Length: 343
Image (cartoon, rainbow, N blue to C red; front, side):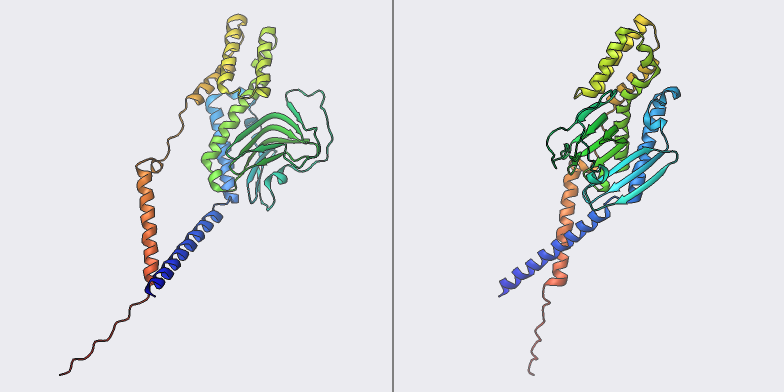
């Protein structure tokens, strides 16, 4: 009978502990869902980082070629759903911010269904064109897997009655100067997470760097240097190769871009004696960002502190469970009255 009581008591302790842990986890998860203020802080950190980096590395006369700087007032639309969140920047005459919480998938809220039947686009320059021409399908045109990062720039997408994208949990989608089913997106960030941990101000700074580095290609192709180089067939051919690689060659990164620019710079300077000032700034910036080491992990993530902290948390939990058991579960011991001795 006593063994049965011990088992029942242990079971009650286990249930109580599990309930407390579940309640704490649920409360923490609920409180970590993105709020209006969270997204507002993210937007400010994103724009501050982008513009600060630009002002520190490029002359005023070339900053106009970078879209987030030249279109500095925005209408920003934040959408938070049960399974993800999205942030869209649209050029506007005044700065404005809108936040909406929805219970439908964030992808369908942003990329509306459009009844199109387009098989080709003519006279399109500066964009890569992607058209779905298969049978009508509910499968997404693009799937961003968990922990994948997809950045589309200067692209036109026609889904023809299909859905555009599905961003899985932990996936990230970035759009810059993209048109989806005739709707233009100046800039958009979408994640398969609605948690604050995925939309911190630190992450906003990282995302600003992603856009700034992608905009290097666009800025170069719009600059005075670019137009001046086009006067020379040898240089124009090299420039067209850079533009083609940026649009079509998977894995064409900053390192390869820097090498191609350096070749153009040497040729323009040594053979044709034309200005290379903007090219020099781009090359210097690429060297700077490529040499920047990744920030170190916080000390509490590194051994031996990670093991020590883990052990302390386990010990605290065990102590807490013991207190609950002693205070609320174990039976109070009753004292047996002593018999009076006969005199």
